[in-house]
Image (cartoon, rainbow over all chains, first blue to last red; front, side):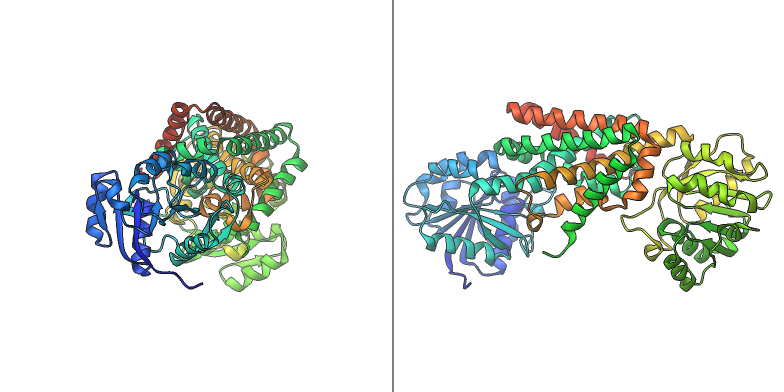
Length: 286
Length: 286
């Protein structure tokens, strides 16, 4: 798909995700100019040092005149961000986001003026390291990105936003916001919450010894090192799917625990084998 | 510690763990000669190709005349291995093992003749990839290794076995078999079972899509790809600690799920923050 050129891309909330949009967008020449805003002065200084965008201290100044606005603030701040930028958005501007939930954000997009078009997106890229200091021009390379149109937008707007995320290196696919939230609960939000709960349970054990921990425990809990402020917003914004998924985790742990407790070798073996096969399917080329 | 030389080291059950003992032991010159046995003909052919040990098809032939015997069969086969090698062991021989549980193996060591000394060990090294084909001379480099004497052995025997595992590259520490089993339940067996249960729960979700899975889910469930035959034996042999740990996992998942369900932002935030701090402690240098 040929990438339609943008005149000015504004990134609102330039941490790991937004900062990487700037670096990748600049390197791949997706716009003639870039502007950005960050709440933190430290991040603004850091972004100024990168020399890829005009850095603004006021969010309205950042979006003024931009033909594409990328909102990359935390999920639980997106509604207030939409309200803050609304008065300054250029008529005809496209607005997209990078949030990990889509139904709640689509609802929040009601705060945007009717003169702009919002097309939600969720690039499946991130890290347990937050902040613009960890931003990378290659963060999106080869990553899956959901585009979640409502069907009410002009098709050309959806295509332009899709081309933008592809331009950053993503592999895009379209689905409804509802379906998106169900998918990411299963593959991301539930594993995150479960890894946090596992880390807590392991620390609770009388035999827990940090210095004996190996790569198995480290890998199994790596995502639990993520910023709680980010994940708090995500888990609450996708609560119904997250709760259903965590109930499954409780049931499956209880099932395996019960089999070990009964000394039921056949049941333990069957559960471990099913889990192995499921896990191996993640490593097969799609 | 100076490494006392062995005349012949016999490795019984030469898969990933035993095969790596051979490769590391040969490279580091821990014995004048090495012998090994594997149940599988494929492994025996592979071990013969490595040209570091005499490969035997009968386990008694493998241990005959060895002054150090390393038993590396799966945990649930160690008792029958001890019984099989007992008649052929040289009087005065040292026997050690590499099993992931220690109380059950100490009990099984009653099958060994009184003329040999058993000193249990557990090098914290492994991989979800099983078999001699994945063996490596560097598997033990820098890895923690528990040595679990009963206190009834001659001190010189404990020191020689300790020197052997250090000679392979391990960092050794001594504790009782009981304490060992409590520690590895917390840092290894419970995380393994929990990762398997998480993988099953994720596969149960209506939104689960293999092609959208990212590195978070992959890491959180990596250990669930391990061989169920190995892990079945480990979980059952350490059942009391594993069951207690999995009950903690159930409780912590339920606690976090309840907080999300109630929309209790303060509780969700506190749990995620505690988990983050605990997880970060795993990455601090000891």
